[in-house]
Image (cartoon, rainbow, N blue to C red; front, side, top):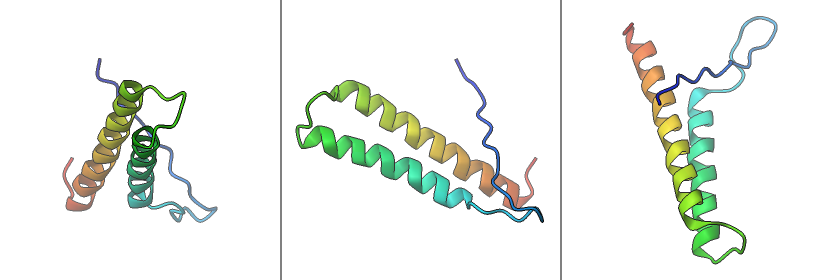
Length: 77
């Protein structure tokens, strides 16, 4: 199942972007990486397969954000 994800932009009252897409994609990758390190360090209550699957999905979402930004900045439709 392939669903599109729409992320609302956080803008001020003049329409200026307040959160850079690169910050969002970096946050997603960092979060997944931290979860994986918790599992590697033996944190109880975390299922390794579930954490790995979630980290992969966060990385995919981050990649999609990056690709969309690159396409937008290059003028691609």
